[in-house]
Image 1 (cartoon, rainbow, N blue to C red):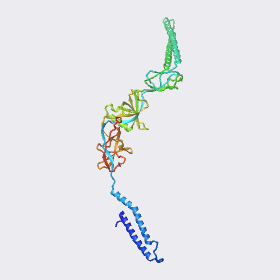
Image 2 (cartoon, helix red, strand yellow):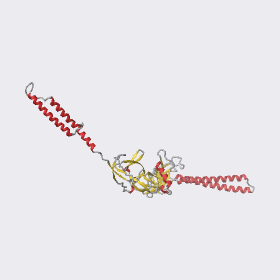
Image 3 (cartoon, helix red, strand yellow):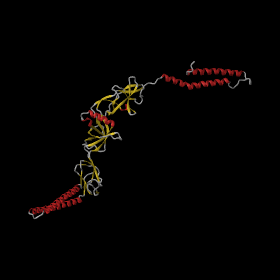
Image 4 (cartoon, rainbow, N blue to C red):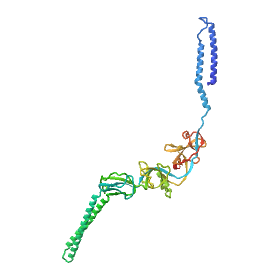
Length: 437
């Protein structure tokens, strides 16, 4: 006989036991009522067999309560097997796309200058409003020219004096030479007059140098724009005394800054792996395709601005593992501002066939990435892939997948590698926003 009982068996045993105990109790009660050794009448106390039977009934009922549900639950578990998890799968999308790299760049001015005075004096005029676009040659600042006009007048007077001495020395030299020819003069006298003429000529040259020096200082009392660009705020107001140094070896007063706007630089850094990919693709190109750069501002979704890559540094930065690159971009609308940020795309090759999967289907695996696929036996198989950038809202897969692989696009979180699933056909949708391309 089996040691396991069904609920019906427990109930039957309980009923039979209660019936047997009832009959036994009645029999005992009849015997005790017939002959009581003490009183001769019926006894009011239950017998020993009654209590034994009651305890047995209680034990059977308790066992049915405790072990009955577990028995039925175990039988239900064995009779209802778990069903495979449902996931959506799809083959990768195929598109003709060009290979390109994407970075974050920052604009900088092609030309930038700190305007400082080369001569000292009192600032008498400011010829611009802060933030104006100024043209090359426009007057920006003027320093009181009076001291330098006086200096120029002194140098001019010295030049006139030097010319007078030169004229006198020339006439005396001529007379000395005439007297020598008539034997009335000496050779020594001629030499002395010639030396005096040369000294006078040197005085003229010295005076002319003083004039140029004075004229230089006077000219630099007017500070003009060296190129066309946007000027900053003035840092010195009219009436202040500014200091200047023509050689730049003394203290000078910073007046303002000026930056050029058109064209403008776009600086960005490439990682070592991106740099190697750029070099290899560039070697394959016979045209300047690898030098084309596209940019998009922070409030733009499309890459409508184009420029030319014109500089790559000569060494990788050891601290960051990147190399600095720079592109030149036209800025006719003056919307590009030095210091602003932009997304940068660098085209590497002509369009070629690539595979696209949802970015959510790509899982990190330590330093690599994997994509979950479902084989013909409906078993989940991970595949290591090499990724590209986001295109049309989808992730480019450079290698690791085939066009016939069924990629898990929905239910990635529940599809464990090696588990069996119930795949349903899904669809990979391209982003409707063309700016995400």
